[in-house]
Length: 403
Image (cartoon, rainbow, N blue to C red; front, side, top):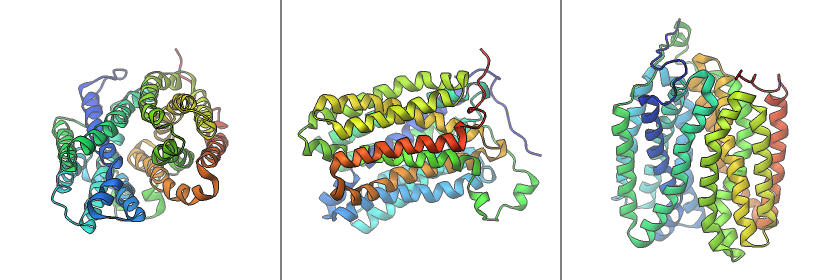
C-alpha cells in the first residue's frame, strides 16, 4: 500500500511549496532558453563547427534530457522526489559554469549532454511533484499557472542571451546560466515535496525494464498528439529567424516572441480554469485550431504585420495547449504512475521539439519556408483528429466540474 503525504488543503492552490516549485521551474527553464538560443552559433564562432555539428551542440542537450526522462520517471519515488531534484540541480549548476573553461568541441558536447541529463531529471522531479501540490479540482488551473514560469523564461531567456552574446561575452552568458541554476538549487532546499512510498509490487519490479515500466500508456496517447504539435512549434523556434531574414521581416520576427509570450501568459491564466469547469475538449479543440491558423498565417505572411498576428494565434494555440494536455496526461494516469506519466509526456514533447528541426531541415529545400509552414499547419489539423480518437471522443473528454 502506498502512502501519499497531503501538505495542502483540499482547495488551496497558492501554498508556499507551490510558489517555490514555480520559482524552481522558472530558473530551470531560464537556463534551457538562454543556451538553446545561442549554442549553435557559439559552436560555429568558437570552434568553427559545421552546420551539422553546430546543430548537434543544441540537440545533445535534448538527447540528454530524453535519456534522463526515461529513467527518472521510473526511479523518482525510489530515489525520492526532493532528493532527485536537489541532486539534479547540483549537477545542473556545475555544468552551467563548466562551459567557461571548455576549450574544445568534444568537451562542449559532453557538457551539453550532462547538462541535458540534469535538466531532464530535475524537470521530471519538480513537474511530477507539483501535481501533488495542486488540488485535484483545480488541476487545469494550477498546471496553467505553473506553466507561466516557463512562459516567462521563453521571453526573458532568449532576450538576455542575445544581449549578452552581442554586448558582453559568452562567458558572461554561461556564468549567468550557472547563477540561475544555483538560484533554483537554493529555492529547492526549502521546497517540501509530497513524497510517495513505492508499493511492494513496485519494489519487486524495481530493476525490471519492460516498456510499461518506463512509459505510461495513458500518457503516451496524449503524448503522441503533443509530439506532432511540438514538431510544429519546432518549425517556429528553429526557422522563424531565418524565414524572416529571407523575407526582409526581421523587425516583425523580433516582436514575434514577445507577442507570443504575452499571449501565452494571458491564455494560461484562464484556460486552466476553463478546462476544470467545462472539460478537456472545451480547451483542446480551440487551441489546436488556433495553432493551425497561426502556422497557416506564417505560410501566407505577405508582410510583417501578418507575421506578428500569427504570433497571437500560435501563442494561444501551442502555448495554452501544452499545460492543458499535461493535465490530461496526469489525470488519465493511475495516481501511483504520475512520475512515469509526467516523464512520458515531456519525453514526447521534447522529442518533437528536439528532432523536429532535423526533419524539417531536410524538408525545407523541397518546400521552402512558406511550404514548410503550410505543411505544419496541416500536421496540427491531423494532430487534432488524432486527439479526437485517442481522448476527445471518450465521454467527451474529462467530466466538467460543477460550479
